Length: 231
Image (cartoon, rainbow, N blue to C red; front, side, top):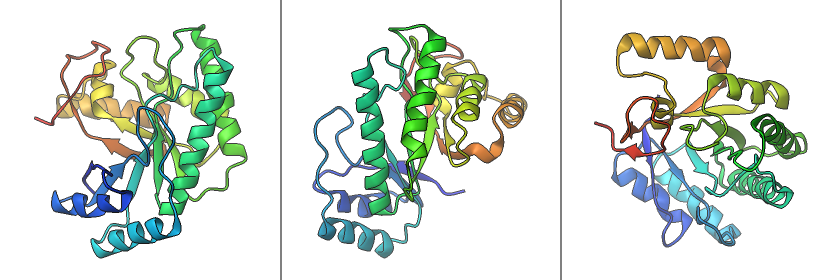
């Protein structure tokens, strides 16, 4: 297993590999655009070549991209769903240009519609993204903390989405802070083993491609997305 961190792309995406190297990363994660909104910076050939050269210089073969936070495949608004699909597709394209192994995305919130309808919208949106996709970079769904009406806080719901999208390359990124806040006790070896066994039986460990290792500012099952530094 490789360990890394999320690093800044301030000043250019090609600055990220050196920053990751300086803090001792074996892999790293970035945004390719502002996570809050706006048009993405262009990835011209010179910038892409520089990024790849820096990755090679510092020995990085594994690096990942997080999609913007405003993606909501579960929205009752068709415009928001369509925009979310478009942005995920753009990130898969940008990731493929950069040699990114996986991008991961938050799924979204069902606050404006029935949860069953929201899950159906998520499945349909992911089908639209993946059925016409030939990108080298693959997509991961990140589990949620269950705050509000966010989708994907249980293994069962994630499994339902994966099974109905029916794309073998769609995987999971498991965030430990979200996991704990959603009610999965990972504080002891025995409780962690139970969670892993549940994950294996409900989703399958082959679907787990990436871990976001975070501590939590909230207690078990409080269903709030509040990350803390480990320890």
